[in-house]
Amino acid sequence: MGYREKLQQTIDLIGEDYYIDPEEKKVGRQTILHWNTSLLVLSYVMNKNPLIIGEPGFAKTTSAKTISALMSGYPFDLYESAQIQGHPDQTFETMLARLDFSKLDKEEAVIWLSSAYLPVRIIDEIRRLPAGNQNELLNMLQTGRINYLNSTFYTGETPFFATANHQDEGSYILIPPLCDRFSIHVELGHIGAMYTGEIARAKKNIKELCDPKITNRILSIINDKEKSIEEKLETIEKERDSYRKFLEYELGVSLFDAEDRKNITEEISSIKVTNEAMIFLQMIDAELNYTPTFGRKRSSDKRDTNNHGANLASNNTKNAASPRAILEGIDDYAKAIVYLRGEKAVRKEHVFAVAPHALGHRLDFENEFKSKYANEKRPGHFGAPTEMFLAEKLVEGIEENYKKVKIDLDLLMSAYLISNAKEKNKIPELSLSIQQWARANDLLNNEDLVDHPLAKEYIRAIKRTRSRF
Image (cartoon, rainbow, N blue to C red):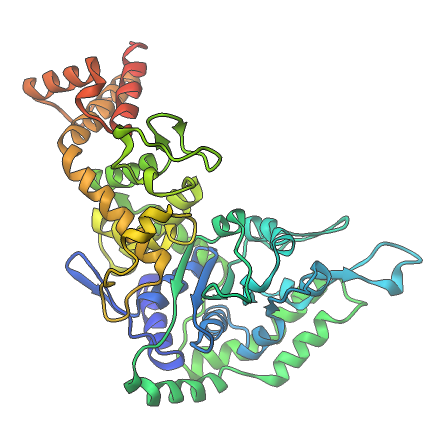
């Protein structure tokens, strides 16, 4: 089997046998089974950081530990021992690293806690961390590096799984920079009363993913003060060999090492994007980051009441969407879903399917927009959490705008590609009719003919290119 088939096999195994995921997603004409599992497994493969939300007791942390164990080849109970626990009293020293006081008379030595050594880092109940403690996680989520005092722990980029209950009185609001470090969010919750038997079976199955002997040996290696970090990592790798063989030969699980993940990520990144999907993605980007009156969308500005911006997505949010949301969130996951399904290119429906997962947790919606949909029935058997539902409605509004300006945007994109090809002395693959060039010139001479920020971007880009030749 190739990588894609192995990934799908693993997703099916996890979603049917270890934590039950009956959630489906209709994307175009295809129905994708185990939708949440698919997004979480793809997060692991691409070294992304997913945020898993839901009510207490519905397998949020279990899903993270199961995926980590089955994908990386380390015991489930090792991840259980090494997970970071969100708590108001947590400090950096109790989460990730602390001073080695036994060596203070000679040097400033650091003891790195067990979560640092594993290929996946997991934090449970992240909303129970105050803002100051959330700040301490920012660099690790972005780069994989853990900095403490004058020391740095780095073994390469690693996925970071975080779980959170829905916002309540006992939790803190996640700070915007931290939200932006999470590529996507998914919700796990009640899946139906008829699944209780399957849930009970899955709990029994998870026990076979535990290996207390190997877990204890690895924890002893991590706690050995005489070994260097390199020696510990090498010894840990050897200790897990028997567990890997158990997963591969006893359970038929395909494991994915760093080289496999690198190759899969390269295959995903090479997926093509249709012009329609590209324009739709660019429209999401433009609408969330532009206002007619103030220019760039800024959380420090008041709401733009200009009539020209009334139908833009920026009118319904208090903040903008970063390049991480657009590129590392929507674009990467749309390509990953296409790759997983064995399709050839990203289409608009793929962008639409993943956009709410990439935007919902990042955006702070205007109260008027929240009120508008407060009592509306949410589609699908399981519905959607508020932030994801609002993000979906936001994208629906962008899609309505897309329908109105599609012809002119297609035309401007083609004109830009042709102009850019000429500038680089390439033979353009596109051509426009006399009537299309006439319309394009009309748009270039009068920007008000199409009132959308993306159209204005294309017009300015074409004019800059034309001025150079």
